[in-house]
Image (tube, rainbow, N blue to C red):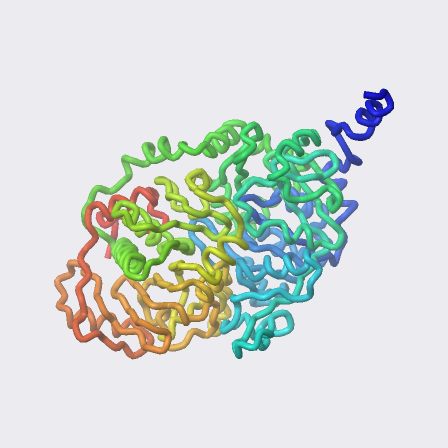
Amino acid sequence: MHPDYLDIINRRLEPADVEGPSKVMPLDEAVRRFIRPGMTLHMNVSHCRANGAGDEIVRQFWGKKPDFTLVMLGIVTNQIVLVYGGLLKKIIGTFIGDSYPTPGPQRIIQKAYREKTVEFENWSILSLPLRLMAGAMGVKWMPTRSIAGSSMARENKDTFLEIEDPSGSGEKTGIVRALEPDVSIIHGPCADEAGNILVTPPYGENIFGALASKKGVIATVERIVSTAFIRKHAWMVKIPGYIVKSVSVVPMGAHPSGLTNIGVSDLPAYAEDYRFIEDIRNASRRDDTYDAWIKHWILECPDRDEYLARLGHRRIFYLRGKAEPDSWKSEIEDHSPDLSTSEQSNPTERMIVTAGRRLTKSIKNHGHKTILAGVGASNHAAWLATTTCKEKNIEIECMAETGFYGYLPRPSDPWIFNHRNIHTCKMLAGVDTVMGILMGGARNRCIGVLGAAQVDKFGNVNTTFIPEAEVFLVGSGGANDVASAASEVLVCIEQSTDRLVENVPYITSPGKSVRTIVTDLGVWERETQDEPFILTAILNDNSGESLDEHIEKIKSRTGWTVETAENVEIEPLPTREELFTLRLFDPKRQFIGPAPEERTE
């Protein structure tokens, strides 16, 4: 070949190991340069969160009232500090409160909601990413099957509309307005110096917020890699360098959330730090303990090196080991002395087992192919049904909203998004795929399982707001999306007149697809949305009460007039196999409640 051609190949056509302008800078410099008061900040939620970056924002803006608007799928643990410190004027979110070990209202959020120091804009876990997707694509509106029929439709009347179907079907189509934050903040395992960011699955909300942000992306990563490494893993690079303003190396920058290294095993991974999350939750119950926690972990912790030193190397090694796929085996062995061998059951166990049986029956009879549940008892019922179906060779795939498909729940850890479950998935995707298509698409065959703060006689679910008590609960999360689009829905809820009400005061999730309600006392069912719920079964509790006595107890604890089937069944007690399977999922009994021998009446 002519030397001039060789020269051109070498100078112009040979891929460089390192390419593009360097955007690497310390995190404190990135925050000073690119974040300004009054901005709308988007914090990405995949399986990890940019908690290290959030801490730096707190340090730099503490006491300054910057009036940020925070756009985030889940405002939990670390983000509560932003509310407590007066850094936010508005939250645009889907879940706002405590999440682990059990979801529930959060004291600081309650105070902000009651005193109106922060404005709350509620969405679902699918509709909010759709707004960001519209912003990223440069379109003004995006269709959605969610929100319609809920109280969120009324609250967000300027950003959610129902219009006539342009194709002339005569049906209504829901649309959400595009959302374009100023800056998006994301953490990933690695990036090159030019800001091409590799993201590991599951992808959660995906990267629409980053692509929609008007002023670009502030990224934190575990390490900087070469452009050659980025090219080698191009299928995992989700954010192009040209929209990135800065890249900062922040080791364990997602902590206390975890980070997967699926597809890039030579990069570090670490699991969620549950103990740390519980410590934050406990500290936040009082101002003095929360002030001390913030001071120790954020305000007087100048950088990530000091943060990791305070964590300690033993804890870091433990979290890295816990990220291994089979780490549950040693963990369940540690829990084995505490696993109850009693064949007696408590009310929560009976409720979950009954819900699991009803799910299995519906999957078999109606041909559902996927199952998706919320956190808590509803999730345990879905896990129990999944394992029962697989043992009986009934086809079913378990999904979780942030991108899990076809996973088999691992023993020892009841948290739906726990790290070990990821390694059993048959596919890893994001909210847009799991919630928008596999759960809620035109050809979905999904049965959904929801928990609830309240449910009414129409199947409407409330997990957002109780006006008379001025209590903000947690919001929709994915519940509205499931109720709006799944083929069928089962609701799992404890029985009381405060929870089974005539009409919910706030419709988080419309009840049109709810066919079954299972409580710790009974089962209600209906065939279509136009029919009333009928009490079809009571849960045997070995109390010696007659059927009529049990039905009267249920009626006294139900907020609507109870209609009963002609022949009300008595649900059999849980079997030893069902109880033991359930206890393997939740060995610390965070969701299933005290062991029967530990209970006090």
